[in-house]
Image (cartoon, rainbow, N blue to C red; front, top):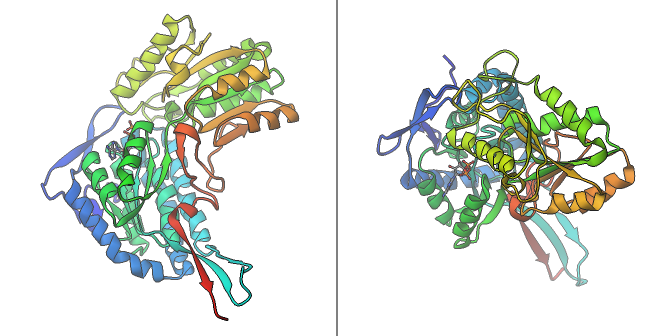
Length: 479
Ligand code: ADP
């Protein structure tokens, strides 16, 4: 039995049931079986977690950066030591192939390592004074209790990307994990406790999203909200945070273009396309939604992509060699189906896939279609599934205009061997992140985040800690 399989919430260092005693099931998306139950908590338990975090804050804030760093390093070591056990829980509740789940755990751990290092480097500033007898000093202080509301597509990494910088900066935090994937969050909290991170510094509250989210956003004690999820919920939470003027970070939806120019390295572009489209069965916010391919390379690209897609094995994430696991739920499958149906009705041509997989449940085969046009749903809505829709274009200007024709602005990809074009495209794309000849851009060392309806703030890198800090300026006069 996996020792990290926790079925209670974690508040103030205690493992607790809901006050009501009620629970919610967690389901394996590969077979629909219930794998466990977690507490159905609400506003009262969220309040309890906020109070615990607030009590624990002064002592945590007053530790040196190095002391916080040491504890984060211990947590990081335990995450690595238990990577296999964590990956197992992750695949069980989320569905992604085990090797990919392991990759996510290592990626998640990398944020704890990175911010353990950054904890010691929260530098201030001195500013040449405007008065001869005064000096100006700028320091940075932890903002206070931080709330993290996270999605199911990266049950581990979306948490550490928020909790890592919060703890490093000196902030306690309250995590509300996605109802689909609370078990990974609880397992990681268990390891944080084992690492010696004090009671109240990390809390995980499972249950009613609206009630818990309502309490976290309404509380004046919570000074920061970091949310990853859909754009409508992000807007709602931002509005809820307005009353207490919380600092808000939002990592929301995307509609990533993957642009392939005639002069691209075809093999490299197809390799990048497979990662950028089919990772996590297409369920990442940086997954490609639209392939924009120049006329001269269009047919060769589509043919090679279809060949490589045929090699992707669909199945239970625990199966050997499986590359595409189930989608998270029925709603997710219906959306992909609807995007395929809509595109075909409006004149697209199916190259491969297109119908539910015989395995049933959340399984949908990797699909490629060509002849996509801007009037189709796939052009404007995030599919969040294994559908590659290929649009054809002629000129660079057309590519830029098509790519930017969306309310979103998270990630974009561009394949070209022309250095000038690479720079022009990078600057013209209205996106927070651009992969040039690269299909995998996520790393703890670089700032992740979007513009327009894709959100606010950046996670990871040296910039990621800023959202958890307040700047204080002191004027030391009368010298
Ligand atoms: P998805 O549709 O992919 O699940 P959501 O944006 O609905 O994306 O969910 C992301 C996270 O936001 C989850 O943890 C979910 O429980 C939470 N959430 C959804 N609605 C609300 C809400 N009204 N208040 C607070 N949290 C919410």
